[in-house]
Length: 401
Image: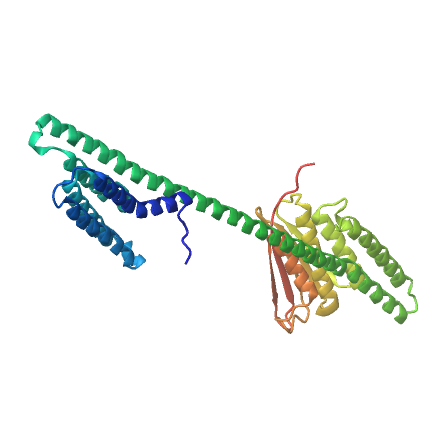
């Protein structure tokens, strides 16, 4: 698994420096010690022995598995061994105080925690303790050294912790920037997909809308024309039927032109919905010969064109279904203004729907129209007891002109 916050180049270089500082300081201290002309008897041997011990300690750590070396207990044991060998060397020869400086670098392995301050303080005590002439020490001198140790502990320990926390925040910032960039790229792809889906959905909706308009206008008009022409073939005086067929043909042509232009019923051009319903009912009765009772209740208000067109088309389709399938002798159309909603009921005393679960294009078209404006459509029918179509839509009023 990849590290979400990988170390920076600076951190990697510092970690490498921490690894080699003990070798550098130990080698430097040994070189200076051996170059000193004043060596007590046996001093070089003890120096080499203690140096070998210190070197063996820091080299032995390298043979441990990486996972073990990073554990806090292993870090603490290694740090203690370095300080102990450094103290032995420094009290043997003060020049090895240089080797004690390794403790400041190794203290960074405890960061960020309070153990960092303890490691720096311990290193400072050994460093200054090995160079202090305890036989000549005074209270003022000890206080001075303690003050130096305290300041050094705060500055080195605090700086180490602050540096690690700053680097940690920078890693998180870089990671956040990377995540944000990835999210932006994903959002761009998602936006493109949504645009494509919206375009496809718009094409589908437009096709369905055009299919509904053709079904509600041209198809019904042609059906009426065919009905009148067939009736004209069965009677000697066919002028009335031919005249009705011509009227339906003219209306269908007008509707076709309006479908291309605005797709709004011509009955709503100069009239509101109740008047358009009355005109529709009168023409339908004249064409089918079925008695149709129209009733409008409630306070009439001018509705949004989309609402009025939908209700008109639902009434038109419901009446067309009655004429084609119901074999009814009476029908009723009620338009009710009830405040927040408008209700449309179309009912007949025909044969009813014998297969309630099967809906043709007309019923599906009505449902889609009503749902498209936030309304609902219910159909109640029993074989031999007629059919009732009820549409409920929000009473959205037309904008003032």
